[in-house]
Image (tube, rainbow, N blue to C red; front, side, top):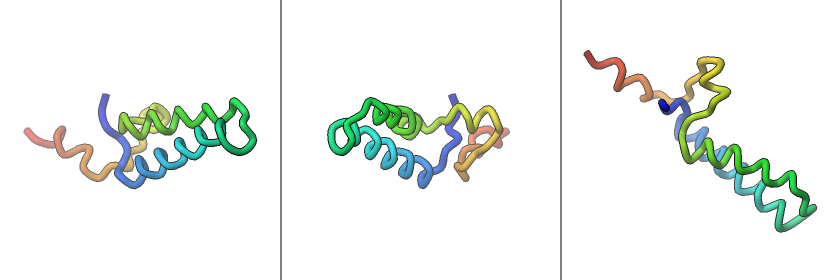
Length: 69
């Protein structure tokens, strides 16, 4: 599994994930907050399946390993 997310993308996803999970315990306290596990997991892995599907890469140094002969 290749990394296809840049540092800023990963940080934003982690923050959004934590905020959504916090909604389970504070605020409206609905189960929809568990959706926050998805952006949190993708931030920790550094790979987004949707990005892979569409060929999107926000990481500037992702291709440096494959560019070497």
